[in-house]
Amino acid sequence: MEKYLDSAEISDESVTGAYDLWEDHRHMAAERHLYHDTVTMLSDLRSNHPDAVIAAITNGKGNPLRMKSIEGYFDFCVSGEDDDVFPLRKPHEGIYNVAIRRYGKLLAEKETKGIEEQDFCWVHVGDDLANDVGASAKCGAYAIWVDLDDEYNQTASKREPSAAQPAWSTATKEELKMRIEMNQQAQQYVSARVTKLSKLPHVIQLITKSAQ
Image 1 (cartoon, rainbow, N blue to C red):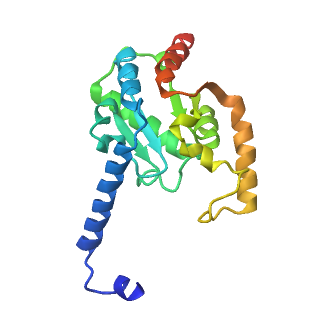
Image 2 (cartoon, one colour):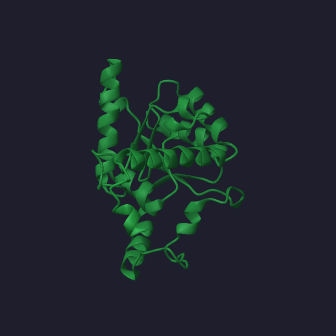
Image 3 (cartoon, helix red, strand yellow):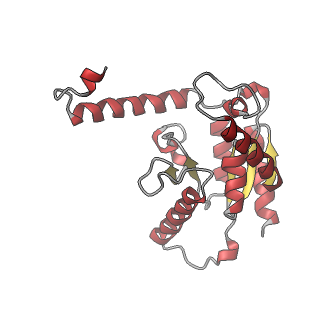
């Protein structure tokens, strides 16, 4: 492998092309494996809040704007791999601050006027207690914990730090202990918990009304 990596015959264009191909197929696979009620949920959410800004905040490379069936529901995506984010991934507040700045830039581009700061309601939806719930709430969001029923086979449940870790995991005992503590602390910031995606639009509706 090393002799191929060091080979002068492998051009930067070849490496970039291979990576782009991987990323294309990564998004095609993600779209094939969307939860069955994802599109309906997003459609209901957009219908309930036609003027809302909907964004994705992810530590990885998954971008809904590259998935045809859901791209129209999102305004932008912030990745932990972005130049203005890395290495400040979730649960670091840096990635959320970037999202807030992009939100402000989007409003400026739309020349949105007449909206006071207190009129804004930020609702963050995520499946990870530490990365999503605790981290976003500390930055000012209403945090919804997506803890889905077994029918979804949700991968977040397999990241439980108190459970046996997969063979590929590099997490140390100290890191796992810290993760457990962060999850426990994040429980206090849960504004709502949903077990089905179809329930999400209604829960967000309740939160936005109570915030008015």
